[in-house]
Length: 160
Image 1 (cartoon, rainbow, N blue to C red):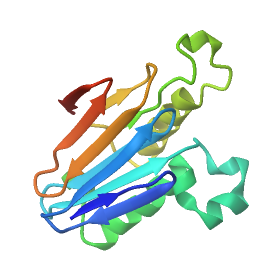
Image 2 (cartoon, rainbow, N blue to C red; image 1 turned 90 degrees about the vertical axis):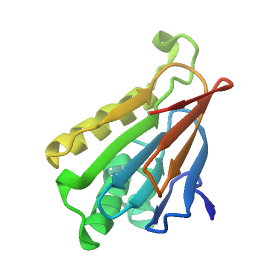
Image 3 (cartoon, rainbow, N blue to C red; image 1 turned 30 degrees about the horizontal axis):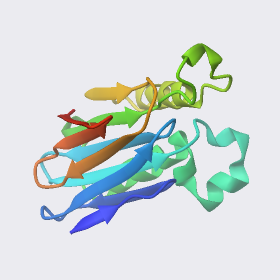
Image 4 (tube, one colour; image 1 turned 45 degrees about the horizontal axis):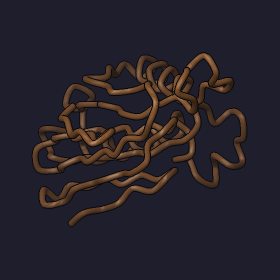
C-alpha cells in the first residue's frame, strides 16, 4: 500500500509491501529512517528547525519541527526493538525559498538541515546520505521492503 506523508506528518511501517511518499519538499525536510534488520521504515516531513519557538504548537503536532519529530520517530523505532547501529538515516529537501540563496532572509531550509545534523549528533547518530539545498521542490519515496529512497526533482529520479 502507498501511504502519503503530508506536511508536518510522520508515517512508519513494517509491512514490506508498503511505500511511503511525500511531495513538495521545499524548505521542509523529508527524513527517512530505515531499520535494515527489521525492515521497518519511517518518513518524517517536518517544516521548522526547533520546537523551542512554540512549545504549545509542538505539543499539538511534534512533526512540525525537526527536533520533536525526530524524537517521536526514533522513540517508535527503539520501542519496537531497533538499535542505533541498525538505522540508516537519509534526508532530502531543505531548499532555499529564493533562487539566489543570499536573498533568502530566513534560510529555513538551511536551518532545518543544521538542526537535523545537530539533533542526530546529540543522539549519537549519523546521516548516511543527503540531498539538500538548492532551489525547487523534491518528492521522496521510501520502499519498506528494501529501504530504497528515491528522490524526484526537476524531472529527474535518483536513488539516495
